[in-house]
Image 1 (cartoon, helix red, strand yellow):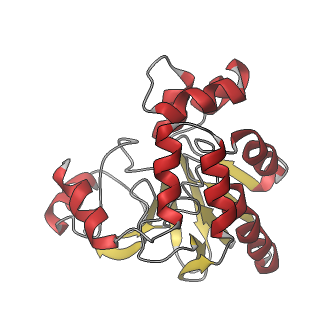
Image 2 (cartoon, helix red, strand yellow):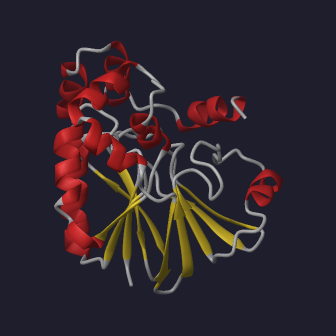
Length: 236
């Protein structure tokens, strides 16, 4: 089995479509949608396109999916997305499973989660010490763990488990304005796909909310991977 792992699309339809075109050329067996796929400027279009993938798509709940299904508001964009989706779709996102598990060619038992296997908001970055990551992985039985959440790709092995962050399709912090994802099997191939950044800027600005407009700045100048990692680590 070969798998495409698409995480943190964040309702960025201009970034999603070229990634899916590349995924189709790879003829994968499954597409894991690793959470926070919908929370962004084009939630309705993004949800419809991902649902059109049918049974090949395996969904995971991310932290913004959980927030959409509840009463807690995380930002200005949250209200826009919740209203656009409606109660039924928001509840569906909130009821998604926390993990998926697949046997992947060349990699073995692969556990997919949004942030960590035990929490949908726990932070792991390229700067996270091996000792802390090892404690996060205590009791986890898998050959590979694939995550997202912090929007930065990484691939390392700690405590005998290969830890892979697939990166973010729609809101990357990678020193580069492209869509980031991972192709799994027979090895880990961390991918980046060009997309129309001007279309993404227009989509975020069209929301007409301050938080969405701030996100648009990510596509005028690529966020620094180092600065993003240091910021996330400061929250731990």
